[in-house]
Amino acid sequence: MHTFSRTGLARERAAIGAELVAVAARHELVTFEVLGHLILVQAHSALGEPAVADAHAQAADQLAERYDLPLVGVLTQWYRALRLALDGRTGEAAVAYRAAQARLNGSGMPGMADGLLALALLSLDLDGAPDGDFGPYEPWARPLVLLVGGSRQRAAAALRAVPESPHDLLWEARLCLVARAALALDDQDTLARVRAELRPAAGELAGAGSGVITLGPVTDYLGQQAPRPS
Image (cartoon, rainbow, N blue to C red; front, top):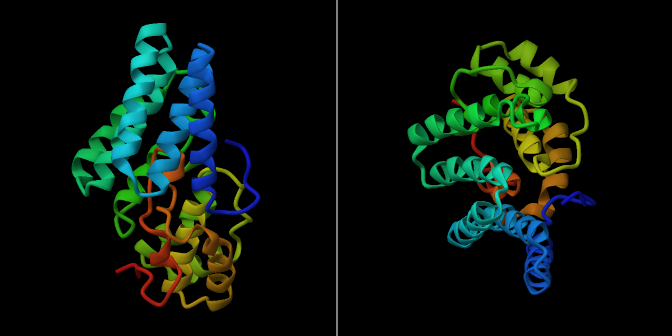
């Protein structure tokens, strides 16, 4: 879950998750079996295989209920909000994200709670007005937020100031936010750099490897047909 030598490792994560589930189930290592299912939820979300991800979310929830593991449901609730987003049901997804955030608050996972709701709501409408505090995701969201507000000069300055993304499950999502802003601002140098980082993830859904959000297919950001902000 913490190996990020490059973007686009969902298929490798899926293989490891499947192995983890098999070994853990054989030896009745419940928490490791749950972990394997959660990895598979994330990996198959990234691979655009929601039916498979659904099955692993259900399996994780069943184990959590049987063995009293309440934090599992916190994570799968975020996945189910993502699932609505994947189906294009953005209004329902927004409601579900807010409910997931409410449950996350006080769950003992402050690192996950900080800024995630605002990022999730932005992912549902990249041309819409921002809603909430982006927390640690703010540097990557800021150029788009400023573009929506009509401040192209400030957006360009914010884009130049974007730091290197942490290498984690939202790496591709951050890169796609930057790519979208760079395309709108015709910043070809930034666009070329970001596309080079993203290219190994072609064929995956950006951000869906987190199991919580997606910015759509990575391929949309790799060519001239990348989505432009309105």
